[in-house]
View 1 (cartoon, rainbow, N blue to C red):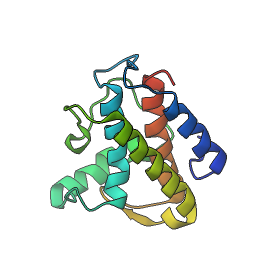
View 2: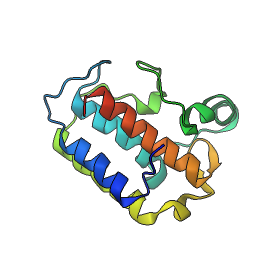
View 3: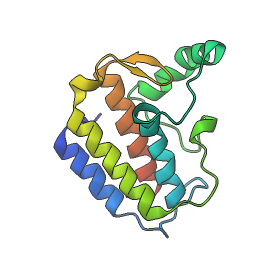
View 4: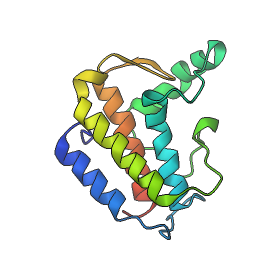
Length: 150
């Protein structure tokens, strides 16, 4: 898996994002390009912003026990997979705002570097290794950029 913490990989991902247009249609799925960008921003909001409630108790246990490995492994996501409710974006978003936010988040994560993330507490899964953080960030972005043909 490519390392999103490497500047060359970050640049490559941002170049793919810059190929998107508000009218870009998905190859599969129902999201519009503005909704997909907003959806991808949620991953970073969970870790950089305090705007989503943290799962507790049974829900946290379920996420760590059954969902974590799917999210942090190198195994690609399946097309049309289910997503957690916090990631659902059903209303129209401002394409340019969401695009700029995503590029800013990706750049911030790269500049902080893998050492910053190593053993950092994740909103949903507890402490993750730098490899798990990388897999989570990169795999999700790659999945959705591929979904939109960029």
